[in-house]
Length: 227
Ligand code: ADP
Image (cartoon, rainbow, N blue to C red):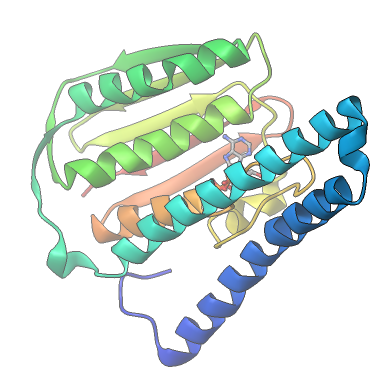
């Protein structure tokens, strides 16, 4: 994906993909609510299970809409971006604070390893988004007892997010940056498949490069090298 406006055909594809992604949770919610109306509501245990499933589907729709908005905002491209000096150490600390609760609930330890403090000419909001998406993924795909490390250093400046999680097969790596792609759709029901596509877009807008190394069962490392 490059940083340029979508052609009409790409735009139409995009609308089709988005509609497709919205349709499934909506259909599930409709079915769940209809089943409740048709009588399932009489049995409290079944009713509670269905309401919890409905809540999950609504959360999925919320995540989708929020990721779609980020994605849409990025279509403005580099022209509308404000670049300013960004303190990478502060941003890394900030993301670890934001994700601390999620990590604790999951039983995953967060670590920060800063080689050198440095400033980067970048868009702060977008750098935050990249770090959040990478760290949230790392936590999501790391079982309890594992760890996630955010590293930064340079010059030339780099950022790394490494986890000791489930990893992925070599063949998956080129596909994970595609919109809506999820390695295992069943296992990642709460996710949208847009997180890494947003990351890649932002990395491109900064003229940076992203590389992934991963081993199944051992973990993954996402590294961004800035120019
Ligand atoms: P989402 O996380 O919303 O599903 P992403 O675009 O962020 O979407 O990620 C796409 C897919 O890449 C994920 O569904 C997952 O299969 C895989 N993936 C991303 N990050 C990791 C990671 N740290 N470890 C293992 N798999 C990952």
